[in-house]
Image (tube, rainbow, N blue to C red; front, side):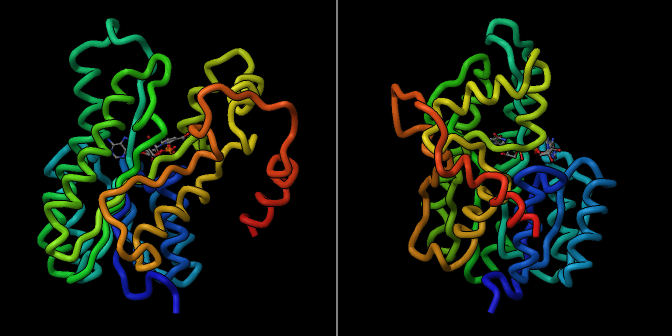
Length: 278
Ligand SMILES: NC(=O)c1ccc[n+]([C@@H]2O[C@H](COP(=O)([O-])OP(=O)(O)OC[C@H]3O[C@@H](n4cnc5c(N)ncnc54)[C@H](O)[C@@H]3O)[C@@H](O)[C@H]2O)c1
């Protein structure tokens, strides 16, 4: 039996990267998925792929910083699929510049998309998650939930906040059968990462330089992170709540460390990607 057979999942930021990989993996595991994001054309294309694989997907246009839209997206999910079991708060954004150059509006925007959105989704999903009897919330943090990274002061603030919010939710709703955990990815090859690299003169060289500080020597695939989200969204992780799971190819394990060359993970990279695509 598939891990998510008969389950319904609401996934934000499902139009690309980690959210898209999570939606596809959840569908493969038997879940019906609501693809929540701002770009309806993209979520429709992903929904077609999910349907072709034999599962069900509902594309929903939603800006997660808007409470009304989040509430409507949850209502539409329940109207279509009859219930809600899993909430994946994955949508996120980043601004790169020093704190003194932020406007109040920019500060508020990153806070709203990355953190306030989780308040909205949990608030409006709560009656349905309670009714499910047993349900799961997974929030997407970052290695920036634990360490600072240059020129991303607001992003870092939001990702630290998500760890606290996760613990609070886990505590307050455990009696309702809800487990809430946080995944914290490291360098993951998604449009968000590429957007940052592409403004640099040599994106590939910049990535290679960052990866020299990663023991496994590779960027994660969105699917690597999706697998951890799946783990925390089903009974494979029974007994776990209020915690963080770091998926970073070893990035945070060392304060001072730099590679001396290749790794077996690096050599296996191309064949691993081929295997995952198959
Ligand atoms: N890529 C990385 O290296 C990395 C590392 C750590 C954490 N993360 C986190 O992973 C999550 C997913 O990011 P990703 O790397 O897959 O990048 P991505 O850009 O592919 O995905 C982010 C998604 O969030 C959506 N989004 C942004 N603002 C939104 C809004 N207001 N309303 C609805 N949707 C919105 C985007 O449209 C996109 O689909 C984010 O929370 C990000 O902070 C990524």
